[in-house]
Length: 377
Image 1 (cartoon, rainbow, N blue to C red):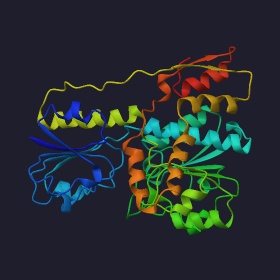
Image 2 (cartoon, helix red, strand yellow):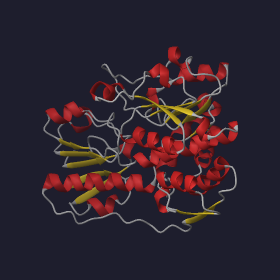
Image 3 (cartoon, rainbow, N blue to C red):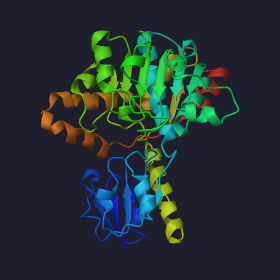
């Protein structure tokens, strides 16, 4: 059989060539003509999978090696008898670690500590639940807003969106719902943006349109009083250059781009394709060695500063931000390609669980915190 696979899926060749002839393509270049005689399509988040793409093709299976599905017309696939598979949860820890590293940068800048903070987590699914766990481990007060879960949960642990927006840190982890009672397009907009207090931190690593970008830009240009972190943007790969310039941290939709997150995505779709075709599962991911896996944590010093040294050694979110902000100095017509290239050529970033920490002296509290963050002690 013929399979069309996004070239940005790691170890896609090793995994999917076991099924047949594979054609690799840039995600934005996958088109109807390429799929004419294909039976399987494997994508990431930038390929719009709908009737226009699949009309008059032989595609019987579509897999997305991502947690989001807003680029997939699932109704069309179901009505056409095409099996669909996603990789829900594959990069949840990656995004949670990104959020934590960004928060640490905010605390260093503001000279505050984790235990002083209240965090509003909007969306408590695969990613949001891990952010909640990390935040609690660090002693933060946590507010959770998730109307769909609130409606079905017997626990009274959820709050309103307005209450979540009153927190010191607000972070969004919702799917992109374009309609309905749980619509999330422009969930943060002109009206409720003003409910965020001066000096707070705002993070969006879910989907670009969850935050109305022009409303956010207006707030920042008028007051410049929020520590803003955007990993996702309206109109990707084209984005507001004014907004990129003014945010504190701006990255090219890579919060979930840890190597583990990507490989989990490949493995989940591989396994689901095996199930669909009735094939034996023979392929397993291969992880490259890490040059330095052990770090010393000085338990006698300020926790936030030591934690920043540690996380910056493992994953420096400011490095990714600088790379994207560098696009402001190149020709405008090249910026969209630059955005995509940063994602396509993303370096190998590994998750916290791969690293061992040695404390300068025994400290049960710090040991418990770092263990809950999945470091090895």
